[in-house]
Structure formats: structure tokens, C-alpha cells
Amino acid sequence: MMATVRTFEVEHLDKATPHDEVASATVRLVNCGREKFIQIDTYGRDTRERPGKLSQTIRLDKAAFEKLVALGRNHF
Image (cartoon, rainbow, N blue to C red; front, top):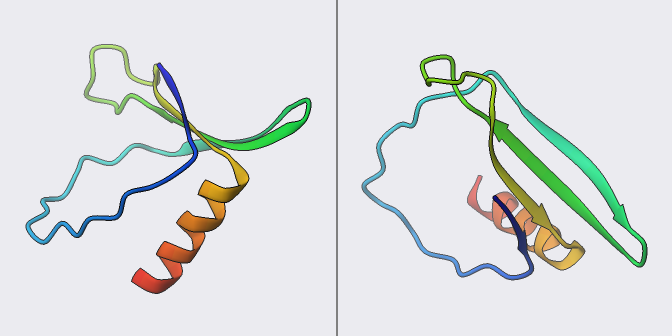
């Protein structure tokens, strides 16, 4: 399943638990004619029934990407 993200709602998660890690994610630079996106694909971890299978895909338009970068800079 793929989702295109154009806006974010920011919430603070104070009681977080660690997630399992995957070996890596793929970042794709997507050009859809008039619009460009940053696409992030994640894959199933080694312990899943089908390890390495595409798990999630998220596309960010320019405004969402810039907002995410700003949120990251402020958070870290």
C-alpha cells in the first residue's frame, strides 16, 4: 500500500517502546511529470514470514518533506 503525504499533524509520544529494526530502507527520487516526491520504502525484517518483502511505501511532496526536515531539526 502506498500513501502520499502532503501535511503532518504533530503529536508528542512520551511513552514509546523500541521497534524492531530492518537492515535498511530505500529512498527513491520520484518524478511524476509536474510533481516530484521523495519516496521511502521499507522492507520486512528477517523474522517475518517473507523477509525482505516490501512492507510500507510513503511519498512526501516538497512541502511535507520540508516540514519533516524542520521537525527533525527542532527535535534533535
